[in-house]
Amino acid sequence: MIDNTSEYDFPWLLRATVLATLLLTAAPVVETAAQTLDSDKTKTIVGSEVKEKTKADIPSVDTVVAAIAQAGDTAEKILLLVNVESFDIVFLGEPETIDGFEKIETAIAGNDSAVADLRHAMKGSAVFYNALDSHGVDTSKVVAAEITDDGAVTVYLLASK
Image (cartoon, rainbow, N blue to C red; front, side):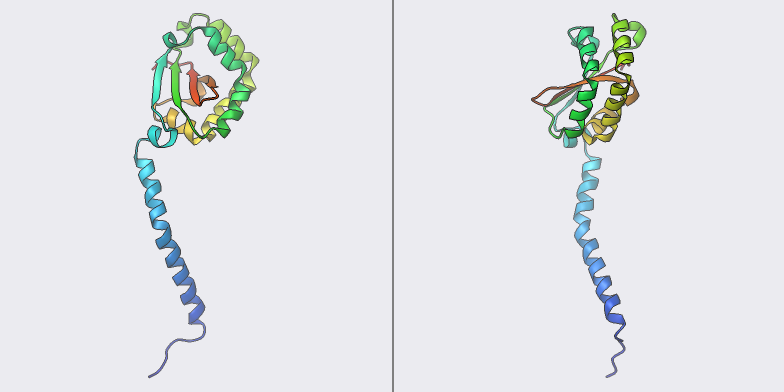
């Protein structure tokens, strides 16, 4: 019997075997990731229901102004946030319909770079990105957010639902 393999076939065969093993091992991981992407994003990533609210659900415009003043600190918290107890999206309405909009506008102007950092952090966070995206929220409309110590998140945006 003649052996048709040469000494150069073994490294190629070994590499092919290792590659096939890695691909077969990775298949369940890819399948699990695909299932996660197909399922409801707000339940699998955020871990709680995302609720939509209106300006009637907030105590006052001063609540939003205070949140805008804390935008820089909130941006840092967003990047570290893993667990969320609740996630509320507050649609304040269009600027011309908001009583006291001048206060909000002044607060945004005074914290312009912090608000930009906040929006950027939301785009970089899977929790925020998926929760907002699943409700059709454009992050450029976000003006503030609050995160409590117990993981309750409230996002304020200048838009109507």
